[in-house]
Length: 331
Image 1 (cartoon, rainbow, N blue to C red):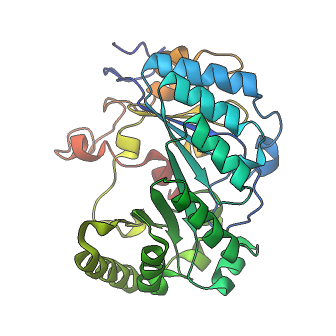
Image 2: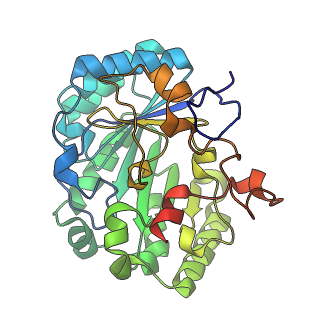
């Protein structure tokens, strides 16, 4: 379908969204220094969408072609309707993924998720030591996370651990991977901090050195060689140390859509940092119109928005000019 861009300089053909991320709530019992919750937190914690509206969102996104649903936050388990949302997602045919700190996951709730058709639970871990876990999250959740990991494994879910890497835990990567192995993890994402939101504010305290990054990647590769196919390990290099710019979410407004806790529809997590952007909201707009017709989603689709030297760069199809949000934050 050709995009009708309402005056925005872009002429391209947009695809259907494949992945819907539902940021159910921004409330969270943790206080992580790298949190990607909005820094103007109070502004976005009012008027959370109710269950009925989330069900409508799931149906509209599925009609557009979305196949995968991420249920995220904040901490989504602070809401008491996740079981309803999971069951609806299953009935609609989504592959559903709960992204959680584990706080609030009880035997009763995980059994309800299993019965309702939840496909996948991603659990965040922070370090091998209780000291760093409690320091970086400002909570005493170290032992809880181990118990939750066991609950996930016991229910037959794939064990998926996400560990945000920063200055305080990067030198523990070997031990973190060994802990994940002991927990029976099937997948581990070592996600180096990307500097948006609160992590940008705390960047000077969180950013490791290039030497630490290189050593952590070496240790990761050595671990991969040892475990083979038993565990899949992803090492996400921080953009600040990458060799080339990344393509934003596989292309701005190409496959990825976020609906926030208060109903804003975004093409990426950090899009709200960009100036002079007005995003549609599900309280007022259908997702179809938001995806295909809104100026915000068409703003950086394709490449006609580019200025020289990007417009004629032979690499433009590979990176689409890189992340627009980071480009703005660094200028």
